[in-house]
Image (cartoon, rainbow over all chains, first blue to last red; front, side, top):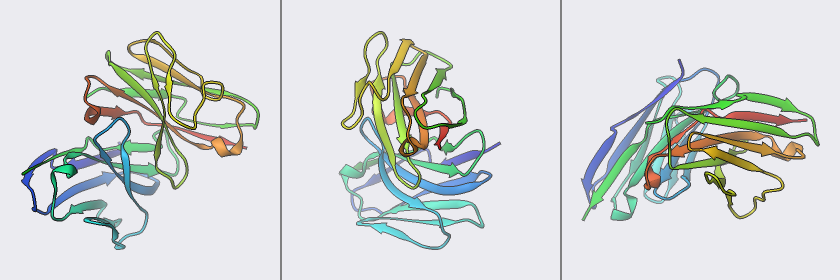
Length: 112
Length: 115
């Protein structure tokens, strides 16, 4: 059965800390892995990863994919209270009955 | 969490036709949403499906193109009308129990290919 597992499910850190969010997957016909930040009605797109070992960066956020070990990490450095949100990982498949498989998300709380 | 199913899981359609996608949630939810994810792009919110009234559409999406129904608290449909190849996408339904947008649950998606 296709699945995406995120860990931890929730995390509380202090401002300035660095956090690493994990996403592992067991999905056939892998096409891409996507990270989203959800704090409003619609998730905000962060990264799309298709190739192993290539780090994507956007400001204090970065992410990398390992297609051999079937996981991805999302790093946030120098966290701020505005980073508090649920971070979603999803895997897109080329074919199959479930085009997109979402993880349950990691709830990050950054306290001042 | 809620279990969400969508039908069909995929379809290949001809230009100019319409397709209705069904979304069923296993329990009552307050909010239901429809999203689109085009190949290589991000998740885009199409509309909020309101129970018993007209859906609330996001900028760039209109009712004539994407009619939505939500007859009760567990079911919604999205129709993609007068399709063109640009409508080829994954269409996702999501559900939310409470008032927090942080607790949405996503369906498995419907992969639509328009020839």
